[in-house]
Image (cartoon, rainbow, N blue to C red; front, side):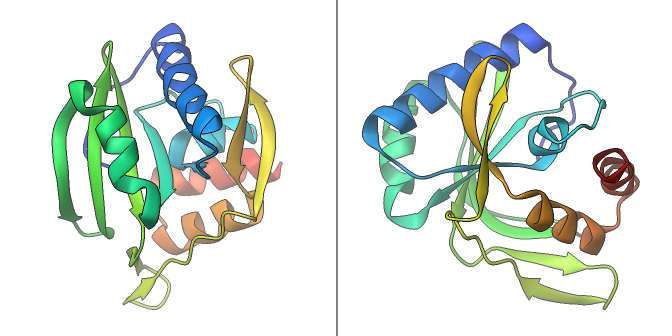
Length: 163
């Protein structure tokens, strides 16, 4: 959401392993979302960053774990598409956006209104991604929010996922 640089597969894998190893060890629920989730379901586009939702009650602990890698402190981030609390970590050159799964709002292009995006940590798929088993937002939920955002990248992701 905050950065559009393209990352390498090896950098993404190292960062994904680093953060998910911690989350699994601590039994912290999470969801991979955004571009990496789309790639998990079949999109072939370049990855810009790793987007993750973390339950509000674990958000501070995850940021404490990643304190040495914080490149953007936790803040309420708002642009034309999103209104949410997030922090950005830079793990060995790879950006990871840790989003607090509480009061996430997105702008629905279909209705022209802001709406709350619910996050259900029980609705996910365990997918092998870059050699790691990770919790990825359900394809149905991912497609649903990408349809509402309606950006060209989202529409391309939907086409790749559904064909």
